Length: 289
Ligand SMILES: C[S@@+](CC[C@H](N)C(=O)[O-])C[C@H]1O[C@@H](n2cnc3c(N)ncnc32)[C@H](O)[C@@H]1O
Image 1: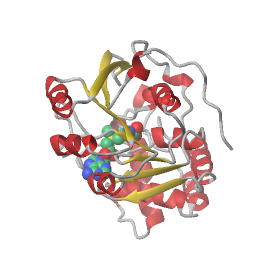
Image 2: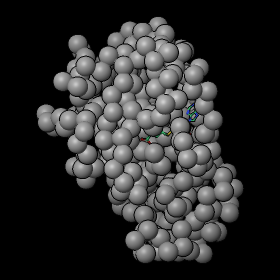
Image 3: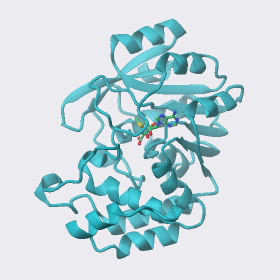
Image 4: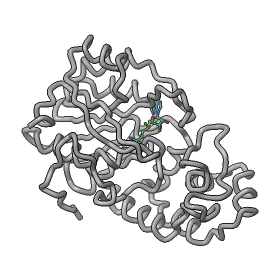
C-alpha cells in the first residue's frame, strides 16, 4: 500500500502547486505544510538509507508524517501533538474506531442551527471529542480551533457554513489513514519530552514545525514555545532533522548560535502572497543541489 512519490523535485525558489500534492490529512490546518511535501521527499531521498523512524513532534494536521507513511519513506511514523482535541482525532483514527468516526461524519446533517447546537455540547467520549474537533475545524474561519475563533457565516467562497465540509472526502481520508495504522503511531505528549526521549536514537529523522508567528495571531490553543530551548535541544539530537520557521532575524540568530544550516524556500501564504520560509538543519546541501 505504498504510493510512489514523484521523482521530480522542484527547486527551492519555485512555488509548489499544492493541487499537485496528494491531500491526506483530515484537517485543514492553519500553518499546514502541504506546500513543503516535495522538499520533504527530497530531504529523505538524500539520506543514506530511509529512516527507521520519522518523528513529527508538533504534528497538528500531520500532512508531512502522513505523506512519509503513505509513500513508504520511513519504517514508521510517530505523530506527537499536545492539543487534546487534535489528539482525540488521531487517537480515534488510529485506535480501531475510525469506521465509527467516518460514519458520524457522513451522517451529520450540516445546518447552521445543527452546527451551533453540536458545538455547544460537551463531548462525553473520545469519539464525540474527535467528531466535534473535526466539525469545528471545518466550520471555523481558516480552520482555526484556538479559543475565541469564530464560526464562518458566509463561508469561504461565499458558500455558507458548509463551504469546507466534505463528508465523503473526510470519511475516505479517515479510512485510508486507519488502513496504515501499522506504520503510523500517535502520542498526545509534549514535543520537548518526546524529542529528548529520542535524542540519542540513530537512523531517525525529525520534522520540527512549531508554532511561531511574527504577526502575533493566535492560531493554536498551545502557541507558546521556548524556541531558544528547542534549538538547543535539536542541536544535541543524533538523528537528522529539518525545522521550518518564518524567516526573521531572530530565527537566523538562533540558527547561527547552534551552527545550523539554513535555506529559504518559496511558498504562497493563505492570502496568496508569495513569501519565503526558512528551512533549518544540520546540512542542507541536498536543498541547494
Ligand atoms: C505549526 S502547527 C503544525 C502544523 C503541521 N506541520 C501541519 O502541517 O498540519 C504547530 C502545532 O504544534 C502544536 N504544539 C504546540 N506546542 C506543542 C508542544 N509543546 N508539544 C506538542 N505539540 C505542540 C500546536 O498545537 C500545533 O498543532
